[in-house]
Structure formats: structure tokens, C-alpha cells
Length: 205
Image 1 (cartoon, one colour):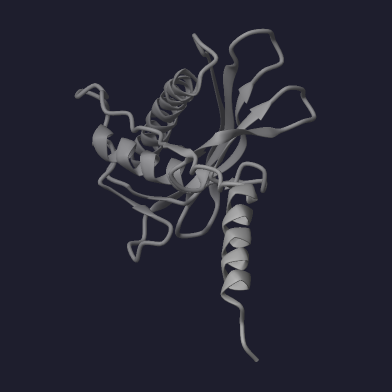
Image 2 (cartoon, one colour):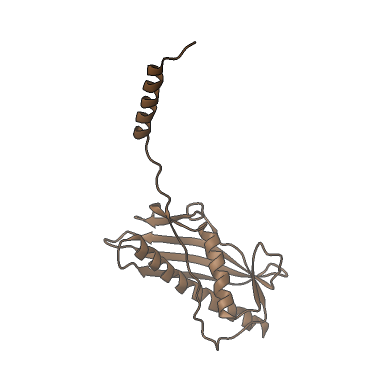
């Protein structure tokens, strides 16, 4: 079977034309990260305990790389062109590890995947981590989590506390919104580190 040169040219032009019709792939989302608390006072009490920090647990809507927003108490959505650098619980665990190390208030910290075993385990249930758009204008960032300190030896709960933080974004753009999220996060992380270290120090005395 012989192919006509004219037919071949027509087919090539047709394919080229189709290429212009096909939708272009969406650009990758801008990636954002949280930061660790790094300005703890030097005179704070120190605990001899070793602390293991597990990755926070969260419902599927927050256990994702997508950055959440809420327009009502019963809805959750996501920013279209932005994402965390990893799943949010993984990012939180890493920044908590950094924050505890910066505080120098426990002998050692290790993530749940580490071979090191702690004297106590910090577990966290994440309930809220989203930009709240229920009021007009720029959002207010909302964070809420419950932390448990658990004795590694017998798995008994040493202490439980709920932490919450909010911060209002100055502008309704992604950079300002994520910087506000980081500010609210650092406030919660600071409280959590101080509470865990103080609790373990009192338990050791």
C-alpha cells in the first residue's frame, strides 16, 4: 500500500493543529513551609527526659500537602495554586523537632520513625489548620490541636492539653496568608514546647 505525499503533509498539519487545541498543563503550585521557634529564653528549666515526637494525626482533609481554607463551620476547601512542601503533619513534626532542639530543654528528641526510644512520647491530634474566611476581607488563620504526653514505660498519659492560635492576615494574598499561618503556628509551637518541657521537668523532681 502506497501513501500519497499530499496525504502525509495533510496528516502532519492536522496533528499540529490539534496540538494547539489541547489544553496546556497547569503550572505546579507554589510551595510553602512552616518555620521553627528559635528564640527561647536561655534561663528556662531543663528536663533530663528524652522525648519522642510522633507525627500528628489528622483527618484526611488536613493530612495533605494542600493548604486549607474555610468559608463556613461545615465546609473546607483549598487554595488552588499553593501547597505545603510535604503533608502537613510531616511538616509539623519536623518543625516541632527543630523547635525542641532550639529550646535545649530536653536531653534528646526523636521522631516516631527513629530507632531511639524516649522516656516520654508526645502525640498530637490536629483539629484545625486553615485560613478562616467567614468574615469579610483577608482571612484569619486558625490552628487547634490536642497534645498528650505519654510515659513510654507503661503507655499511661502524663498530661493532656489543647492548644489554639489565631492570627489575622494583613492582605488577602498567598504570601501574606502563609506568613500569617507561620506566625500563628510559631505561637502554638512555643506554648507546646514550654508545656511539655515544664511537665517533664516537674515529673523528674
